[in-house]
Amino acid sequence: MCGRFAQALPPRDYYDVVDDQLQGKRRPKEGDSGSGGENIKSGPQLQLHSQVGEQDYHPTYNVAPGVQVPIVRLEDPVPLTSSGKSGDQALLIQCMRWGLLPHHTTFIPRGVDAMRTINARDDAVLSGRSMWTPILRSGKRCIVFAQGFYEWLKKDEGAQKIAHFVGVQIPGNGRKDADGKQRGMMPMAGLWEKCTIDGKDVYSFTIITTDSNDQLNFLHDRMPVILPDERAMRIWLGIGEDVTQEEVRKLLRPYPAQLDCYPVPREVGKVGNDNANFILPVSMRKDGIQAAFGRAKQKDKEQQTPIKEESLSTEKATKEEEKGQQSATTETNAPIKEEVVSANKAAKEEDKDINNGTPSSKYSPEPFNPPLSPERPKGGYSTVDNPDPTPYRRRGQATPTKREHPSPGVGAGNSAKKRQLEESAKGTKDIRSFFSSK
Image 1 (cartoon, rainbow, N blue to C red):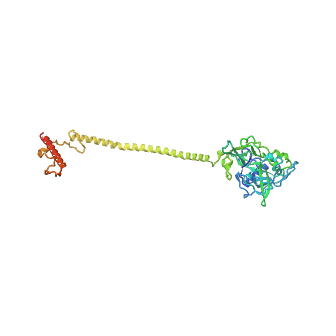
Image 2: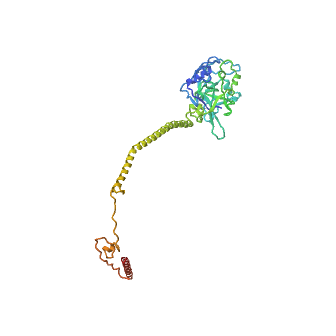
Image 3: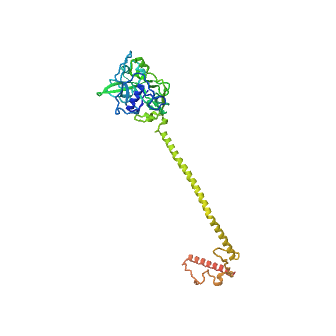
């Protein structure tokens, strides 16, 4: 099956590559990354005309059904007969819509109906009873040159499908593979038709599919019919006098050679997405998330390395500077420290001399001998100067007059309070008398 393919060469480059592959000119040798190479010839020179201009189609790495792309066909189709007399014919490059419309079609189908004719099974084409059989016999065969096609691998039920790109390993100038080698375009066998819609001629084509070869069996059970060499392309187009129905039928078989096949970015699955990385392995893509993380990691590593080295250098320089400062401070303070110690020692010796060997304070060179307190007189200081046993008062202060307590008032409660005061005064007098007698 072929539901999506890549064809991103501009019209001029497309013409050159197709002409090289059909004519066998300037084929690069294996491993050659340039455009030169050996010249080979597999038949007479062909006349290749192009009706494709820059405005006719949009080169894209993600061609979807319904898109206009260039194909190669005979300029004047010759019906296929058993005699094989077709003669040399000029070739034409023409833009056509992908999804064949039968000649009686009066409108362009949409949705699912538009997908029904993007592929034609080889067994149906050769059955003699399908809609494809008269198109094959009428000589409306074409070649769809593509850089490769996409197929989706479905591993488990419900799991997301993995997009794969498939391209030929034929040397050429159609694309670069994962190793940077130049590869040719993939020539896929197709059929084309013309119909009239709203008074305009509409050209459309389909790609013929066959059983997958051993290499692609894991991916899908169907694959496009890929024409392996120049001779096969000439036979399919009907060029030469030896083209017979049997020879054309033999070309509808699986591709016999090895193909490039690898997973690609899943974004190719959305119609409208277009990127040159779609035909490169997903591990090589330059715009993916993994690559972005890889670039960020590498950038951080490059940025952190000089910072780390600079930090270590700065730290080392700081330590050496601090060490030097400490050494300088020690050397500067050494004589000061010795001078202070000597001065303190001299001061102590001087104090001993002044005080007759008795050390004294630095600020009080004379020894401080406070006078002794006189003996306490018998009865205390209060009885010497003030024989009146009254509470202590300051010297020179007048003796307070005796204060009468105010009358507490009338009543039994007042009498009890008066008695309490009298007993308290009596107790105080007794205590004073006791201490005075000592």
